[in-house]
Length: 410
Image (cartoon, rainbow, N blue to C red; front, side, top):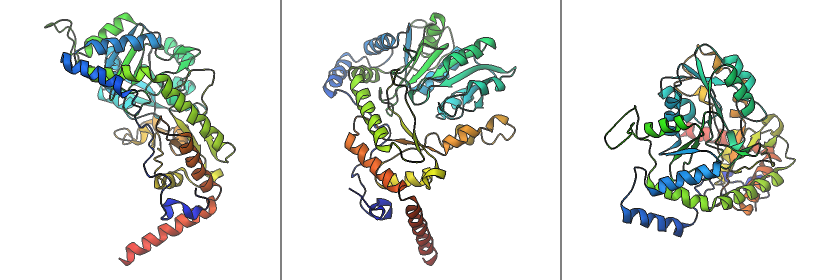
């Protein structure tokens, strides 16, 4: 146990953890159960193209979400691109900048301009009041992102979309297994898009899914995800190859069997982080609504350097040295990435709340491979650092000065 700041790994000592702790290390589920499904796939030689496991997976997810239609895809980004085309979006679509780059890229890839909207300081999600100020004659839709598993302000966004005749869809990549007013996320807006990438608490190795209650829209999406084929040799619409493979569906079905176990581990660790970091000045944990279902995957800490005396980035480097690979989501913000940052004419690049969070958020490791003891050790490092911030920053500055001097003399 490290009790003195000079024990920290960043100052040349052994790290707290021999093996790295990641944000979003894949949960696996029952290996034997997956192995049985894999053997069935190999024996049948039905590897893709809507095989039995994909059909079973789609039906199981539809029941879980309480929606009529689920269309499984090869990944969440392709699912979003197909959804955008299926909805007929054009011109401009309003989207938060505080999200993963795939969300605006899916629009840009389709020839649509993503108009970046600021977020609500408390929820970290798109601010409906800001949405209304960005609507123009070219606006065709709104994409809300359910960040950290917390739902957007769905009712306010739905009202805006209806008043202005806009399409409303949701990026639910973080929100599988979460609810809003007791109703599972997946059935709101025109449709919702999920990601089942390996880093998500529930994964299909690589995969995604579109959920909707709209019959016509579901049929169009299913066609578009298979080149527009309506039969063996009849193509009736434009399309691409968005299909999920059988092995991915098998992984998904296996993960569903252990879903509650995954959530319980995440929740246990989240509560331990909350307990261990309570009362630490300048550290604010994102709060999940205990009345709703949540997957608790994301343990999100805001680091206010004016109170801590140390920056988020300095704390991240200290944690990385201890083999705690905390992440700066979603730094530096989509609006500061290409091709968007080069368009100096865009007023939607002025996003003060998004900028603030991009420089404060630090996501901490949490999955079934992280124990309560691991969480306690991570939090001890954070406390040791912040409670001695002045001395730590002084030593970091001296270390940097010594390195520069060594490089010059070399």
